[in-house]
Length: 132
Image (cartoon, rainbow, N blue to C red; front, side, top):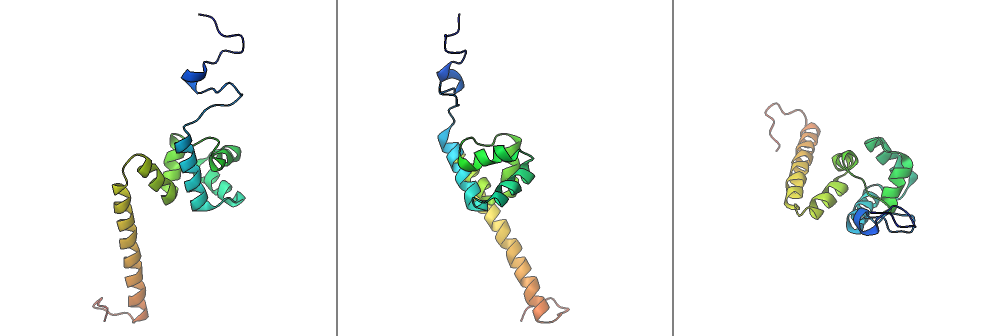
């Protein structure tokens, strides 16, 4: 088998589009980019934050924000660990939205506990721990 004269890439098999770029799974890339922008905005600070979270190069992170490419493997795990937006998007794409309910419930329980502690401090240090 010989390679075509224009190069050694087979467009349909490896995602190469013949125009100097690679085809990507648009839905995944666009959804993750949208989640990153919702979570951190389009600012340079957001790019730096994600680069710190993942250890990825800033240019790579800019490509994630722009939707040119998407994170994979360890980078996707790190993003999901730090961003509820990315985690929610990932779970929705996997058809596991029900798991987000458990995450939100745990966050609500923590917020209620913090609020209850603040109310107790405002009411004075009640040794019985009851809120009146």
